[in-house]
Each structure stands twice: as C-alpha cells, then as structure tokens.
Length: 518
Image (cartoon, one colour):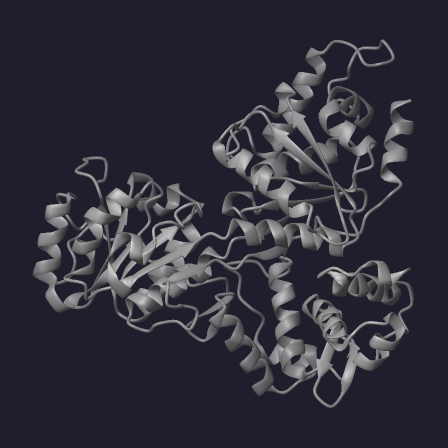
C-alpha cells in the first residue's frame, strides 16, 4: 500500500485499518511501539499515536505507560480495565440482560482471577455509567427503574421538581422512546429524596395523573410559589416546545431565576434555543440527542468491521420528516469516512412490509410478520417455476417476491443499515425467511435501542438518553456535572449495543443468492 498518497487528516485511520488487518491475519503480530509504527508506515508520532488510540478504543490494543503496546488479550492488560471491559461487553452483548441479577462478586473474582477489590471498583464504575444498579445486597443489570407514579398529592414537606411535558411524555409506559431518560431522571431524584411531579403545559383534561389539578401556566406558577425553597427546578420533556413556549414558561419554571430549567431535546432540532436567545440566564440547560454522532458511530463501526458496501432500506410505511433528515445525514457523513463505504439505498414497497413500526406488539411481532409475509407471497399466485406457492413459502420464493431487499443482496451489500429498530426487526425476520443467516451471511445495524425491539439479537445505536437523564437529575439536585460548559449544552453520547447482528462481511452471499434465483 502506498501510504504517501494519503496526506489528508484521516491518514491515521489508514494506518489503523492496515494494523487491524495484519492483527486479524497474524495472531502473533503486535505493533510493539510507536517508533515501530512510525518506521514501518513512514508517519509522524501524532499519526502513529492516533492510529493506536483507534485500536485501543476498539478493544484490540492496550497501551500502558512504560510497558509499550500489547494485544488486549495479553497478560500485561491492566486488571481493573480488563474486568470492567469484560463485564461491560457481557452486558452490552446481551449475555446479562437488563433486570437480571449480575453474578455474585465471588463468582466474578473467580472467573476473572482478580482480587475482590478490583471487581468492586469495576462494578462501581459500571454503576456510575448506569449499566448496573444496587438492590439491597445485589447488583442488577441496567439503570435503577423509576418508581410508579402515585395518585395522591405530593407530601407537605420535602424537595420537589417538575417534569413539564405533553400528554404522551407524561405516560412513561406509553412513550418508550423517552422512557430511558425519564427512568434515569426519576431514579437519580429519588436517590436524593426529590419527588418528580408531572404537569402538562396546556390546560387539558387528557391527564388523569398529575399533582397539579389545573395544568395551566398560572397554576404551575402558584404551585411553585407555594413550595418556595422545596422547589428544585424543572425538566421540559416536550418535543414541541419552541422558542415562544420557552419564553413564556422559562421565567416561571426558573422561580425568579434561581432554579435550573432543563430542556430535554429528544429530537435534536432545538439547538437554536440557547441561553442568549431565550435570555434565561445561566440556569438553563439544553440536553440534546446528538444525531450527528450517532450516524458517525454507526458508519465507523461498520467500516471497522470491514464492510465496504452497505445497503440502506427505506420503508414506504413511514414517511416522517425524520426519515429524509437521517438519510441525508448518512449520505453526508459517508463521504468523509475513511476507509470509504459505498451506500446502496433501496425503497422497500412490498405490501408485506407495510406495517406500523411503532406497534411491535401487534403485526410487528415475529409471528405476525411471518404470517403476513407468507399470506402476501401466496396471494401472488405461482412461483417462478409455474407451480403453486406452498402454504409456507420457502427461501427461494421469498427472495423472488421481495425484490427490494433481494436486489440489495444481489448488488453485493454485506450489511444493512436500517434507520430505526422497527425496520431492522423486519429486515431480520425477512433474512430468516429468505434463508440468510445473521450475521454470518449479512449484518444488520440500526438506531434507537428501542425497548420494544430488544427481543431480537440486533445491533443498534443507543442515543445515551439514560446518561442525559442521570445528568438532568444531578443538575436538579444541585450538583453541576463536569460535562456542562458555559453554553449549558450537553449532547448525548451514543454507543453501539451489539446483540449479535454485526459481524465481518461475507462476500460470497451475493453469489449464493444469485445462484438460488437462477
């Protein structure tokens, strides 16, 4: 490889990719030092260090001061970092699932051959990242669940905070998308003795569970005045809160500019609502969904796994504005990626896929989709050979009747990048019906980490809403997180949760599918 042709800012990525390939092909090979990399690739120290940092972030290399570079599996790996990484991988890969008990500490000590103190420090670090929480003497996987709302009025004493929301956001169980934020927020407030009270920003009789009988702005203002020092601030969970709405509500929620007001921007499109724009002082915080970072992470992980031709199915059952925005963002980001990826979009318009993706408990269940797909294929009459379609169509018949996805595979795509988990679920079930193994034949990556779609082994991008909820709780409790800068903006940090659908590319899948069709 001629490394001198790569003189742009991503030259370090070229070095990292080549090192990754060499380590995969030769398990005895390890770049032993920065100087070794500089000499081998004719690069400077900054480029060599960035390349090593990329592989260290992927868990392939370990760098230790005074000890050089080693593979992650080598004995020189730091014990605490190793235990932390292995437990975290078991959680994110679904080996230990949310709500389940984490194995006892004595078992972890024996399994990883480390001291009890090392295991305790690793678990404590995981708890700070909301990957585990304590229940009595046990550690449970996942953040501490929110307590169910009470139907009584709030207590006469004790600190209080308000969650200002629309009719959907208040019902946590009905809005799974924002549920991780609300659960983490509620858990952190409860841990500090603060009650979270829901209030609607409109005078509306829709809600039947609220601590404020009349949810209008005047009623909220009167309640805040009555609570006085008990009031700690407010978190706004309203997707449609615009500048005009914030100008009206912020002074009331800030309580004479002395209490924090937090906007949870789960759509990521309220970046213009800054402190200066709203004139609300330094007590306003904007916690937002970083869609840019989520897209960049998905593409970089696909590239790191070796995928160079990625299919992007676009389902006609969903035509929301977010679809076009995410598609354009992916296309924009993919041009800056090194090594480059070829993106192959395709419109999925077969009626078998025309289902409300927000209703996974009905037609979107595995059984519901399989039945719908079989019924639609039978309705097409005969198979390609002229024979009638069987009651349960085989892989060849599925491939012939669903040309949108079959065409992607025949074009040589080795992975599917789905815009959300609902679409990924249908693609996964289609692969099973079409005789394709996931990820052995084709990989699938999506977005959301939606709670209702975690039943299947899909790789998905989690937007970091639990972390934002935890930080919001810390702010309302008076502890300013280090992540807060002078602007008050705090982005979500996305993470890939691989439950089993992301693997190395299989370049033979397209040829096998074409052979089945001919």
